[in-house]
Image 1 (cartoon, rainbow, N blue to C red):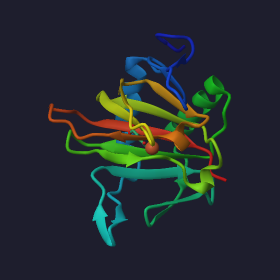
Image 2 (tube, rainbow, N blue to C red):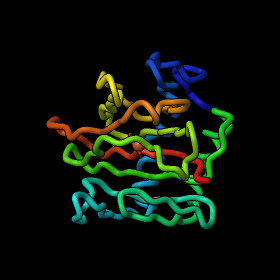
Image 3 (tube, protein in one colour):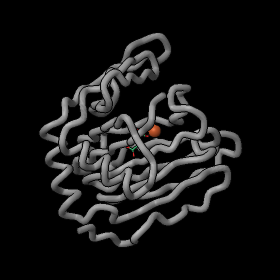
Length: 199
Ligand SMILES: O=C(O)CCC(=O)C(=O)O
Ligand SMILES: [Fe+2]
């Protein structure tokens, strides 16, 4: 049984975007269970990306899972999917049922503490197709997810809580970038999963 705060996602009104937020998609106990299960069972790596001609370690750990043969490239890094683990598969099935969208891969990010972060970017790689639907599940520490409009530079901030789903669709990746800033407050571990469909 699901103990949701809301029975369905709530639209987050933002121009040039299609964004919905579903806090309490997982109960606190379920989110805790998955946080610990994924932290100890995924093949976490600190990848490097190419920035200004140099390879630099990213400030977080990552892992990429999905259907056989699904690969994903960004910033000079190519990730080949490991096969779904049982925990990732059960989360994927629940998210597919709840949203009506299908996913063939998931990028997992582990933010060890407040020094871990993700810089401004849009998930607009060609292999995600036009207007991709990306569903983001947060487990553990609440961190601020910021969105910045590519032309107006308007910013909004959503504090993504444990067990929440954020659904980005439509023009969101065309018109907005997003990031997770470093935090000066003491921060516990946060895992974020972004479910994607790679073509
Ligand atoms: O950690 C987050 O909430 C954002 C993750 C993200 O933007 C990504 O995986 O592309
Ligand atoms: Fe992203």
